[in-house]
Length: 257
Ligand SMILES: Nc1ncnc2c1ncn2[C@@H]1O[C@H](COP(=O)(O)OP(=O)(O)O)[C@@H](O)[C@H]1O
Ligand SMILES: [Mg+2]
Image (cartoon, rainbow, N blue to C red; front, top):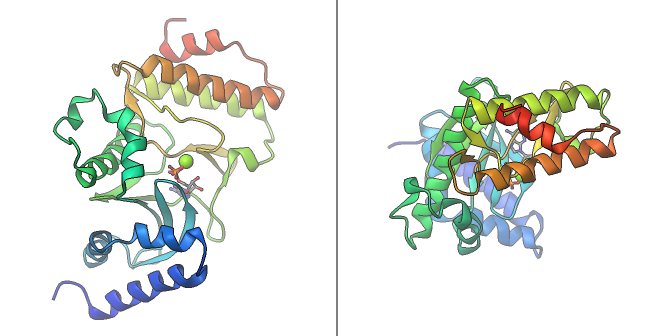
């Protein structure tokens, strides 16, 4: 007997409560889609392996999946991102996996494509973390589930940069440009979806999240994606009174200034 019957029942009743919280809403549909049979088995496995003890509560419901807070056996917290195994998820990720030889052979197998996508997020997190970029520390990845450091305090999840009053926008901007430089030059990656929505603020420090779509700097679209990231960030900080020259920022990040 792999995992205890008690845990299995705990998990099931927890998931049931998510499902029935909003009986008629879209959310119900979302939970039904997220927790398909195979995903439940993956979660059981995480529990048997003592990666997590229990899923705590949902932190976010996105179009490609859900993020939950989880507790470990020794009372620590983690974040668990679960990609929904569906056609629409697959469609959204396709432009990032096309032409990437690591994804050759995925073909039209959606489940396999999405598992590889979760794996890609995990590896990107690892690569960034190893190179000193402030991202959630990766913990575990299995199938469509990515487990990582939980960004938040004991009481509340960290807020998005877009919702936080920034004490010293100039300093945070400089810090973020440095993080982007490290990402480009040390980790050889471009985030590709960097904005105030994918940056959490913890103790006044930005933490970059949502790195599944990040590509290697050699990806044919990398430069275009990098410019888009820079546009988002400079635009946001401009609204907070920080003047900057996009071309200068680009040079700084690429190191040919
Ligand atoms: N490690 C984490 N710690 C705390 N909250 C997180 C963490 N990862 C994600 N979240 C929350 O879940 C939301 C969705 O996660 P994200 O990785 O941005 O996925 P997506 O935007 O693709 O749905 C985030 O905006 C944030 O609110
Ligand atoms: Mg996001």
